[in-house]
Amino acid sequence: MDDEVNMWDFLEPMSPEKVARLSPLALAYIGDAVFELYVRRRLLAGPECSQAGLHRQAVARVRASAQAEALRRCRGELTAEEADIARRGRNARTSVPRGADVADHHAGTAFEALLGFLYLSGRRERLLEIMQLAYNMPEDER
Image (spheres, rainbow, N blue to C red):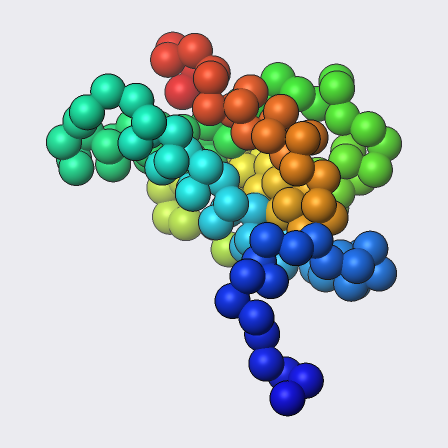
């Protein structure tokens, strides 16, 4: 069956052609999940903490304002291709949650689109560099 998906396919990169056809919001969709899993895994590797504590720490790192700041911090180090993906993610039409900062929401989407692009393209080392930068942001910037 051609439509059948191997459960381990999520570890394999997509073809460059397929990645190029994905919308910025599709890239952000997967980038959000990749970053959330990365953050949760890192938190579990740290000191023991209550479920509520883990949740608070995760939210501090994955919320739009933290992602926007992470993107600002690494913007000067992005390749032209990465900057273009982030720009497309930032400009994608999304509905902004009530009470959210519009600029942070768009920048957070840009960050997630970049992560999604790197993940699906199989650029694991670069993906890790950017996620580490975002994760290790000083507490006062989160």
